[in-house]
Length: 125
Image (cartoon, rainbow, N blue to C red; front, side, top):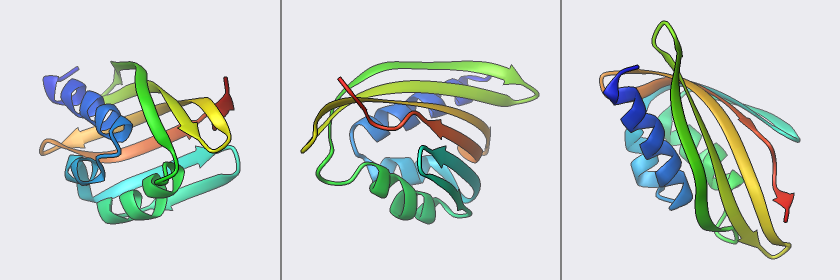
């Protein structure tokens, strides 16, 4: 696995934990191929701006406080595809939760060009 993939996967999870959507947008290719599955919806976006505004800022809205990035792991899969998993401790009006996501991604030109995400949903703790 390339150093770039490790850096990008780790940076994505870290920026998400910090609600740093500007950094996330800079990590994604302008014309990213993005799809995600959450417990209630399938998401498909084609630009970095859409991923941030129409997906991530909905998943983690201003009332969700990410308390901690509990775990992050990046590993190679094959043929340039990488996997990043991360677990977040999140508190909102309903109390504390864990959210875990698994993402597969490709990168080129130091940005994520293709990404598929599966989300556990907000699990009360």
